[in-house]
Image 1 (tube, rainbow, N blue to C red):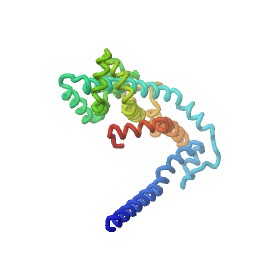
Image 2: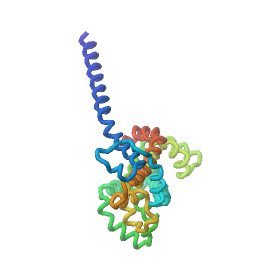
Image 3: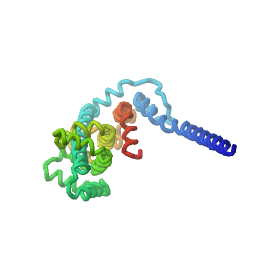
Image 4: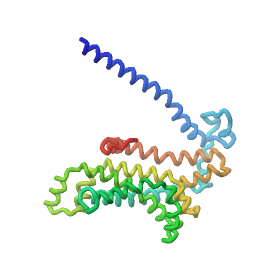
Amino acid sequence: MPIIQDSERSRGQGKRIYIGIIVILLVCIPFQVLPHLWMFFGMFKDKLEVMTFPPSLFPRQFFWGNISETFVTFDLWNNIKNTVIICGGTILVQVSISSLCAFGLSKLKIKHSNGLLLFFIGTMMISNQATIIPTFLMMNDWGLINSFWSVILTFSAWGWMVFLFKNFFDTLPEALMDAAKIDGANNLTIFIRIVFPLSLPVFSIAVLNTFNVVYSQFMVPLMLLPAKDKWPLMLQIYTATVSAVPWNQVMVLLTTASLPLIIIYIFCQKYVVEGVVMTGIKG
């Protein structure tokens, strides 16, 4: 009987904790949702209504022309194209090189592999601000200033990605590699035909993390891409928020910048959850 009573007591306590968490989340939801709704509806207001206090959520009249006017004024389609080039190029270069490097460190038993891994981990301890001037001088010497390659190469030098891939590749059984070698497969074939299909969750985590970091950056493009026609979307938003730009147009910029993150998460959340569970990454 005492055991049953203790079990019922602990079950009741767990239920109360669960209800308390739900209540706290319900209280916090408006603080998370309302700013985004105000941003979304703010892009349909005129420039005077969006600045009224106290603020109103819904516009008195929907000005649909704000969207097209903002796209034309800031040449947003060009900014979106530049963002796609920078993000896509960085993902391709960084994920490809980092995964191959991690595969070599994990499965090929390279000499001094532990020292190389420590080197990659050590680069994570250097702040981005400390490398801004050396990066600019190096890209200037290479003649890459005002080139997308300067930003892509800068963002691709991320040691954390090698560390992430190696930790995952270490969990793959050696028997699969040995069986493939017996069948005559070389290391590249093993990586493409065996390792890559088994590592889709960690590849999805790598792609999403790379996209989030590159997409939200404006300091590196500001330093390496002085020409306005090379600016990505976030750099355009930064310059708009520090300039005398009507806030209804700023809301259009912010909403446009938020859509890719929402869409990508919706379609990739399955792999995100699997990747978090399998790699032990804490969000």
